[in-house]
Length: 230
Image 1 (cartoon, rainbow, N blue to C red):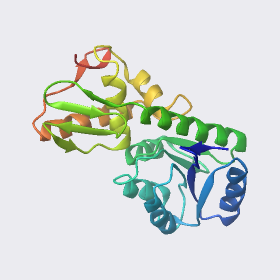
Image 2 (cartoon, helix red, strand yellow):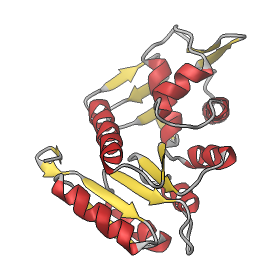
Image 3 (cartoon, one colour):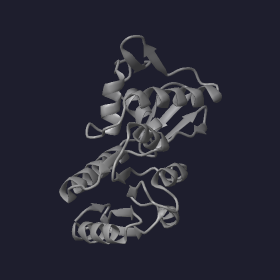
Image 4 (cartoon, rainbow, N blue to C red):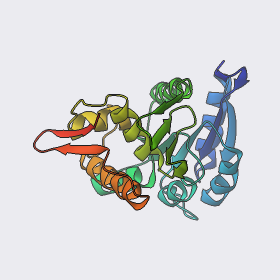
């Protein structure tokens, strides 16, 4: 059984095709998950307030599409979001990752592969939850367990992928990573997105830190990539 602290982990599954939702619900319940079924974007928005451990979200829902749902809920939901789509263009991938998605699966998909991806994302979240607070200097504190950043005692809000990049670079401070390595580590090697999205996320991280008076913690090493300064 898939459990977290003795309780079954919860998946929110949203698709306007009822047969797909019901099929996935039966499949994941047999594997020990608790499933919240949503048959459209509006219902997904409502059920996301229950803070599931992971969300499987169809892109092409007619009432509120998956990208809109993803963008709307990222302000209060930090769990992994996996987008389900019949077809995908590169521009849609970039939009999805920018909205806060963690991964894509293209329909028709293998149930076993989908289950493996879900389990991998959830294991990654559990490992992150085991890490505690780290102070980098007198001003900046990163709490990996709570996934929060404080600058001079005040919280700085970051989207999930922005925090993931901060986490990866800060835990390897001084090391230089190119965009492809950061993308593989943060989005997962299975994802089919564009590593150019890394530069946009780092730009946002820097802008948010600068807005609260912080200096640049992520340095650009021209021709090589990025590093978290020691």
